[in-house]
Image 1 (cartoon, helix red, strand yellow):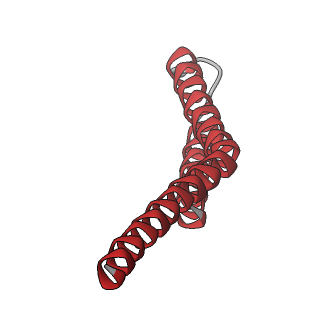
Image 2 (cartoon, one colour):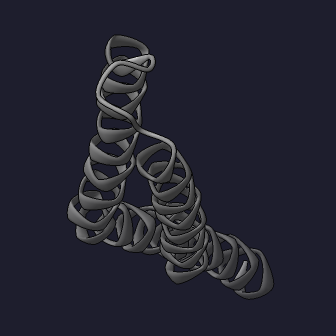
Length: 99
């Protein structure tokens, strides 16, 4: 799970760096009359992309404890099933040995 969070964080960092780079390029080329509407729309898109990446990271971080509990539950259920199987097998073998 930590690996997933690390990959999400790395992806978000890359996206942030990309967004910052593009914003810097866009802002350095802005003149009052040159493509201001196009630039404004692109800045809005970049801001939305960054917000989505942050939201995905927060969601993954929030879901992590639930996933860990689910894995532990499945592991516990599997261990319980193995214990029951061993107990039944031992019981059957013991009963066959004594009779």
